Image (cartoon, rainbow, N blue to C red):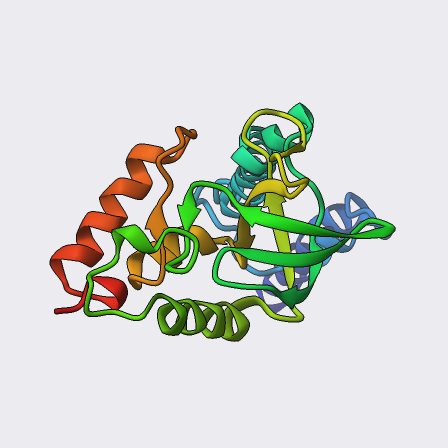
Length: 223
């Protein structure tokens, strides 16, 4: 009886070892995943991250529109149009302040006298002043204001009619700007000048600034 049980046990062990060997023979020794005994995940693979790609596309789109926008502004800027029309010249150095309405500039290779277009200084037309004011004194006040603002600084001359023009005395007629500020306008706002009776493109605008200085009793309009 004992021998029969021993034989059955040996037979059982034999079949068990044969089954293990059969399973090992099916493993691919070159495939590392074959020997990975960890449980396989059944969850779905995560979706690809599209945030980085979206940011890159947004950045370059914004850059393109910004470049196009700044280019359009530069092309249509009033100063750019003025250059195209030939009525704007590069910066020029103010070498002398002659009086309250005229300066001398180094215009390209020569010095030239520039008369402020659209304004008159107190000494140029004293009939507009109050009888209580001294035209010569007011003229000196206007001249010193110009000295403080533009003497030995680079200014820009603007010709409203497309090309340089001169008056009967040979003075160049132009609007004078410094740092983008119309000097004639500033003179009017401070009451250091009066609007010329001759028509010009900024006549109505200049009259408005003159009226504001008059109402505020500034400069030659003081009481």
